[in-house]
View 1 (cartoon, rainbow, N blue to C red):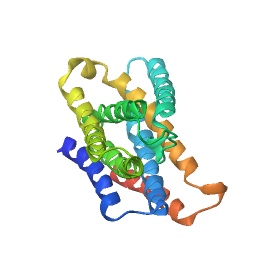
View 2: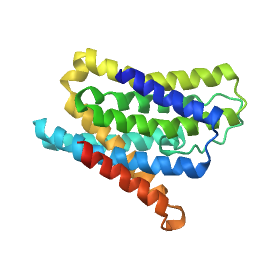
View 3: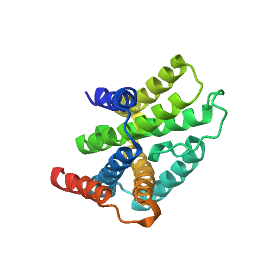
Length: 225
């Protein structure tokens, strides 16, 4: 069921674009909520867990920093799709291989700690993936790629997180170093979620709707952990 929910979150986001065509304001509010939710789960659930069960706390800190650096590198190729917008300047004809690979690596890594972290992380990632899928689908539609290419892109992207969950559950290597891997993903989540929150307010103006979305994301985590 975990894999199904992860895949459906991408499918729901894609269908929103095709059916409802959500506006940018709605997407930004959903992004703010998902960013706050993901950040809260990371701080309240994942961080305490890795430091409680890890034997070498310094290594955990290094892995978290490594995750931040890794996500910074991935974003240089994914053009910011992980936090809600794509700065792609191609001609719309050539398939963006680096963007595709970096998004798939990111999505795969998201699935790795779910098996050990539980449902709170699962739902945080599900909520996070919906607006990302909306942005990605909107980008693909705006290009000159074929429908088959777009479907392939969305499908493979949707399968990456379930693949991460499967690998974590069935491969001994991932299970053996799950605390270190989770620490790396914590760094990834910290990078993404904070950027989403920092970018959620335009021109540093207070936005009540986005503030409420962020507050709801935090409160939801507090009351469901």
